[in-house]
Image (tube, rainbow, N blue to C red):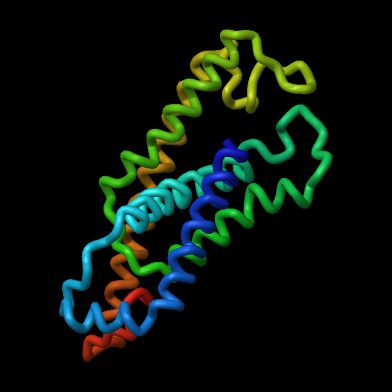
Length: 201
């Protein structure tokens, strides 16, 4: 799951860099369009919609990975930690970067979009079951990807599955609350609407 989260993060940030670069070089024309369209602005492009979707999924999976790893897995993996700095980067800094990005981007948060984010753990848990049934092992001979997903004890896997889903729901509410707080700050400090404020909060 960590590798999946890192790859999603890289893809999301790559798309973000494209959007920011495009905004920078087309700033004047974009602001002119915003003024002409009024407060409604122009409709989002498919590229922006895909980025919006990926950002929501990556935010959730990054924080779930960080929470599960440091609360449950750290120091209990039954395998040596050969690259502690790399582990810190992939299990902590990914969430830090995504949180900073989340505080900066201006698109809205929808609680129901958590459904899309939940598709990833469903796919991953299905993968771990197939991995176990096919006799897959890691380099140390363990028949599981993570100890909490050892399907020789099915109840442990089911509890992990339920716990991850609960975390997704909790983080969805947290993200929505932060978004509403950002909107509150925007209304409080922007008494007069200005195109220059678009995209900042």
